[in-house]
Amino acid sequence: MTGSWEQTGGITVLFHTIRIVLYYWHERLWERVSWGKLKHPLACLPVRNDLTPEDYQVIGRLLEERRYSAKEPEYQI
Picture 1 (tube, rainbow, N blue to C red):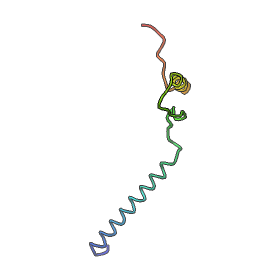
Picture 2: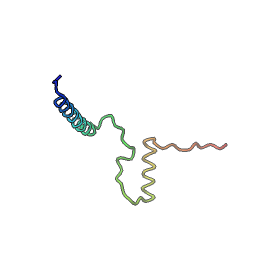
Picture 3: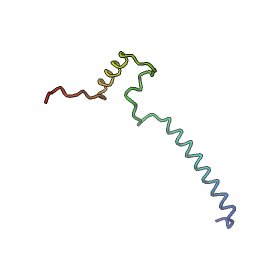
């Protein structure tokens, strides 16, 4: 189109550089969108290093309320 390999190469490098930069910012902006993403069932709980037995009970109840944990069937074979 330009008749010069140097100009064509420069345009190509510039074009792809702009595309990479725009793609990067496009992905950064999409990461901020919250709709359509699944939240972890325990995302509302604060995180601590040392969990007490009471903490495990609270987590278990929360998972049962939200139907994320299945209880074993109560039958005997």
